[in-house]
Image (tube, rainbow, N blue to C red; front, top):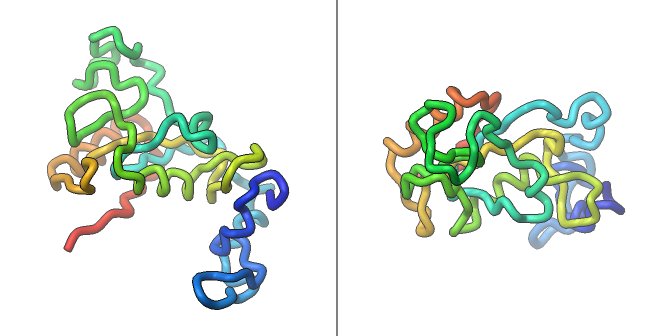
Length: 173
């Protein structure tokens, strides 16, 4: 992946060869050994719900990794699958109560890339599980603010719509 994903060498958490990390050098092999695991599993078939500020669904490392609600027809104004969310073909925005979970902050896209950025595509980085699909569930707005009710609703949506894993890497003071 080092040659096929240009920023791979910066991913010391996946493969630490002692590269510069911040202001010091990393410790060789102090990492997740993700490339060693990929021959056995790369997350293929798993759906990871990213509950955050949304996801840039057109990002070149993520566009092909996005989960699709195949029971829903996008932009027809009908709740085809009867789950209470109209046109939720690509996830849901719980912050704005609409079917557009695109990121207007940046953190959710970063998280989604860490989870499932495409491998060997000549762009950027690679995720820990590059075979997984990302379910974009936005509950934090452009300022990174959201409600506990929105987070709970997103977790319930993830479970009801087939997510295998929920990533909730957000916090509050």
